[in-house]
Image (cartoon, rainbow, N blue to C red; front, side, top):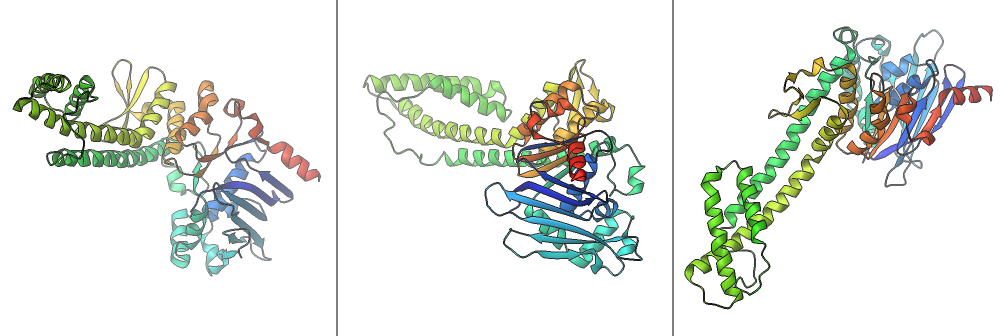
Length: 432
């Protein structure tokens, strides 16, 4: 339902007398410029408009922002328009939404002026504003926006203007964001683990069912039966090992079974008579074949479920040096030095923390279509990490549209044709 990306942004009255038009790429976009060029303000405004962040919308100077969305699969072009209007005698502008689900549909309107006491909500902790919005609107504005597109908004080194003052001063922004991310990762990894465990439970069920009449209808005693006994034996070993069985309790029995099976199959191929042990070995192996077939399916599905986690660890461990990140039994991310010493995440360098946050946010998008907006994600990152940042993010979620404000040519890397120079855009438009 919300598989839309940002196609076009038009801002009128930006900084009072500027207009700005941005035609975004479906995949990667960079807003560049020196400090004060407006790149951070623009992405703040875009994110605020699509997340109903009224505090930020109230703070930024603009008259109108129009955001045209486009579907990855559908032709509909939803549009979100936010208007700020000032009335004489009021220091605050009224903020109104006009949301279209497609270009041809009428707009649905929402207005902050529906609050008689809306002026009381200016510049107070956002959670109180959201609580009152929910009381009066229900979740209608937020739900409407979320039905159109999913926003993943990250500003690591700047506390969001919408955050509570008491939280801003409580701890460093990076450490707080890292702590929040780790909690979300635990929940995500736990969810993956439960899904993978569910497959193992179904496999165990199939083992019990295999004791009944087999699923195969063919002749078990046909000559030249295509059986790779060594492969089957190795697969059985891996199954027993996975369920932590003692090797001494099964190895000799498995080996003995395949010795007898080999003899029985040779007799079948030579068209010799079979005794009851030969028959039992062949019939039993039919059921083992079923178990192995089910196990291969389970292991592939399990690998697919856990693949995002493994990709994340592979990327992180391919970037950092002299440290190894891993997931413990409690689904927590841990790190160990080359000298086998555990290191608390809070003791990582600022660049390593930043790397975990930026990549972790992409992982938590769970491979869904979304718009990933970030303000200067390269801060504190090593140059070599910056060069590979976008490619690594796209490896974690190829379905995300990336919109970054950045100073770094290293982050832009090979995406030089995806750049919007804010100084050029604003100066040209201002002259016109």
